[in-house]
Length: 392
Image 1 (cartoon, rainbow, N blue to C red):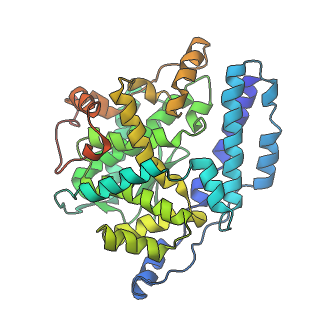
Image 2: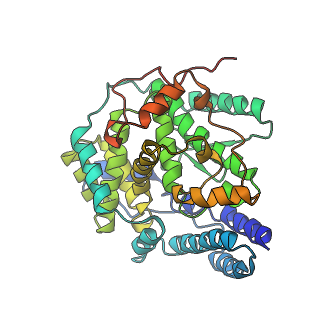
């Protein structure tokens, strides 16, 4: 029974692309309108209609016989996932309504005082890194990702990744359900190329690949509340790959401030003004963070990046494992449960580790991460100490 419920939950999760359902359309036109208004007005966000039947999906989800699973341990893990998927369906259903923020807080949490305090400490104490020219575009990113995929395929022939270049994804790059989406107009400094590839491919795609090889299929799509650890690992990958600039850390802090304002029903112009005028964000970054915070009516998911990074560094500082975090997608709080599931034969060690873990200097860089706080996790200039081409 556990295997049947596990497979059904994974199938439902694969069909529920809630992130794309909450991705605004026409963000370039919104930006032009916002600039023309003197940063005073912006039209309501628009979204594509979901391609899935929410009501039918919810009925199928709630009909799953989780209570008949023999193992209390598996029943707890799968029941937790069932409840999370129900909240995700509700989140999409409430898109654009007054109930959306409450549904988002129920799913991703709000902004706790300690996290907001950390965000303000970063905004007040961390400066931008040395300016670098955005000298490469989407073609160079595609080539780097294809090289990355080829490297993994040499070690795991069944490793795969679909790359989608899209002019309207509302983000430079993102992974969703095994696809990497790239903004067609993407431009970035060459020094940021490998760190971002290691974030998206080395974290999100590798953990999905490893999860697909687990007896417990949920580890591919993600156990409940897996987002903070995934995003924490992704940002840590940027640091370990040699270049996490101060402005990147400031953006994560700005997302926390923006999420807190969105919870309080501040609109895009007010969030933009706070980030741009009070905290010195560029107009483009301030607008991007503000739009992300107002997705669906107030999406608090963006607060998980800084929360996940903080909690991951706490885990490492306490002597916690690193390699085991790549066995699939799960929360730090699941580690004790996963150890028991290993003994029961439901979980295996990770099949692959990220490419940057093979680089010269990786061990030294990881040990450094076990001794510093979030505010210190950034570079003033690109560092070659962690990510170099691995030996042949």
